Image (tube, rainbow, N blue to C red):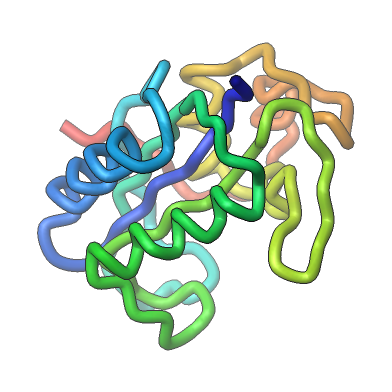
Length: 160
């Protein structure tokens, strides 16, 4: 089964609890969580005048194909109460597909690897914690190398 790397994020309500609920739903609906990073706190990116985010990266073995995975993720986000109002706005949960094994895919609804992964420290720090040597299939750089080159200067700090 392929391993997918997912980024969880929350900045509304009990952020830590939303990450826990998301992990439980992922285990129940998407596949086995093989690894999980620590939880990190980061100032909001994109729309900055909002509460800080908690972020975590998971490595999940799944038998779902990419489009099914995206559909299930959207369902899980809705189950947890996510309402899509504005791009990069506040949300109880956000689940992004970072990598799907070494697949490169671009459709109307889905781009894998995540197109902004290399530009976001809040993604690369937890991703590098669990998969430092995984190589980006388009950029041909490891996550560790991407983190060293990341132009994002937002502080990412371990939560608790």
